[in-house]
Length: 200
Image (cartoon, rainbow, N blue to C red; front, side):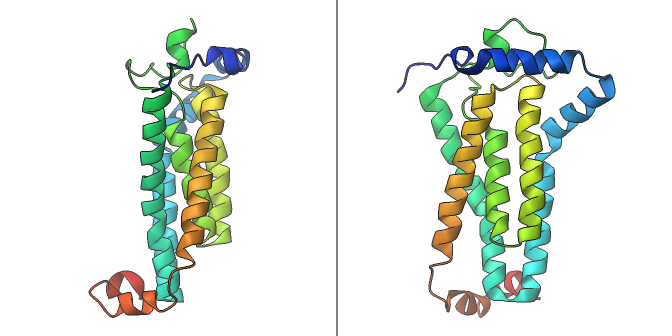
């Protein structure tokens, strides 16, 4: 197990700048960012649902790819959670004396990497394999999600960058590997009880 990372030594000044900027921003902007930070992951779930629904019309191959997206996101989240336990970086809102928009998570809820960023960027990259348009929308949303986690004060910028890298890399590897499965696998699956999930 690694020693606990002192995040403030990595990019503490940048974190302070962003949090101070949030403190002096209009209340409506802070409120909007806080809501997105807390509930924005639901948008990625919606995009995955749209991707699957549209993919069913394109055939079993496309539907299998779309159904893999949430599995890839869950796997990325699991990997991120393991990294958190290994690195054990305290939240910046505990190590630095700053008032933040979001309440500081409990002790033991480690900061590095950002779960939200991992989920968001894994979803964005995986969705590119389903639809470039959906992937582009998800990528913009993922960037906004990562920025919001620093803005509300619960993550250092490097937490978000690491989460984005983990999510994007794992999603790319997994979705690329999926494309190398036997070509007749989707057809065989569509002849089973899974057919309603694969074709419209």
